[in-house]
Every structure is written in structure tokens, then in C-alpha cells.
Image (cartoon, rainbow, N blue to C red; front, side):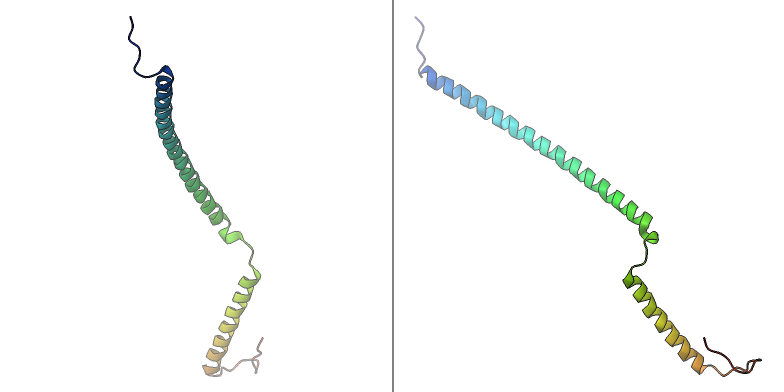
Length: 106
């Protein structure tokens, strides 16, 4: 006669299912880790590509953007400073005689 198993069939079946589930979970975790690493690499590559494209677009438009109100205001400020410096330099220069008599300032 055949020997009876030492544990009931239900317990043996439950143990087998549990071992199968545990093995599947471990395999699924490994697969998830590999998939996450692949996604991370794709994202990193896409970000690097996007950064490169962004820089190329910026470079292409850098000198072609219209001046802003602040740009014009800053240029006006610099021009006024240059005019003041030029006026000071002209005051220090000796007076020159002009063939027409007097010199007109514009």
C-alpha cells in the first residue's frame, strides 16, 4: 500500500502555490527593476536631447530678438553718459577757430 503524505493535500497545495507566488514576485521585482532602469535611461537621453535642441534654438534666435523696453532704456542711459563725457572732454579742449566764425552745436 502507498504511504500517506505526512501533511494534508490542502496544506501541500497551499505551500506549492505560495512557493510559486514567491518565485513569481521575485522575478517580477527583477523585471520591474530592469524596466525602471530602461525607462530612466530613455528619460535621461530625452532630457539631454531636449536640452541640446533648446540651446540650438536659443542660439539661432539670440541676435534676432527685438529689443525690449528695458533694452532701449538701458541704451538711452548709456548714450546720455557718453554725451556727458564727450561734453566734458570738449570743454577741456582748446577753442578752435572755424572758418565760418562760430561753431554750431547740434
